[in-house]
Image (tube, rainbow, N blue to C red; front, side, top):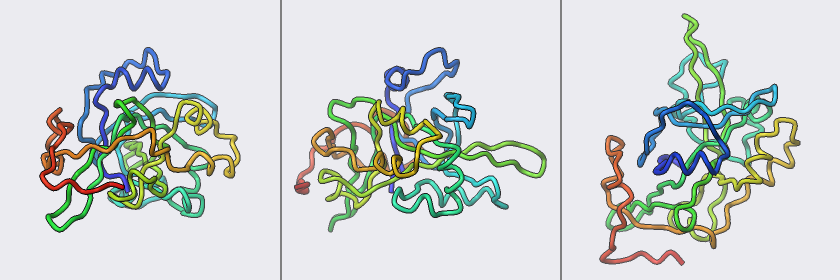
Amino acid sequence: MCGRYTISNPRKILAELLIEDHGLDLPARYNVAPGQMAPVVAAGEDGSRRLTEMQWGLVPSWADDPGIGHRLINARAETVAEKPAFRDSLARRRCVVAADGFYEWQKGLGGKQPYLLRLAGGAPFGFAGLWDRWCDPRGQVLETFTILTTGANKLVEPIHKRMPVILDRQERAAWLVLRAELGALSLLCEPFPASAMEAIPVSGYVNNTAHDSVECLKPLALTNPRTLF
């Protein structure tokens, strides 16, 4: 799963996502967590694209309780088309989640070791996502999103069995074309090449969701390094 990620250079990320004049004041984020608001590029049924902030954890439009979103922060790419919570959004409401890294925790005898996983050199990218719109009985609107996951590549696998679906520029454009066939979309959900990524051990400072500073990214020199290969 993907339960934390980074937006450490929002200006650079938005430039990579080809977003201009968005009108949002987006601060650097070093530890984005479920339930928080975060920027996404959403595709509308009319073919429009908009940069907006949504809450992480998808709440289906038909849900009785918005608390369901805490359990729907990720959607498995292999089964997303079959799940009632995601099926309609896959066809009608896809999005790209702005990011430049994500965290996973490797289990070991000494506890869990967090790693920052990112593209080589920290290049910005986008996750494949879905979004939905929920209204409470008073008419208050809540827009939420989920991040698709796939099987881990060879770099990520020793740390975690799954990883978020990372899209390159061409794939992002294809993901946001709502008329695309589901078969074509599944091809976009392959694991990102391990050779184009890096895994950096970081301190347990990132474990606390209240910690959202550049300290989260600080590399940790492991006294007993775990072998990733």
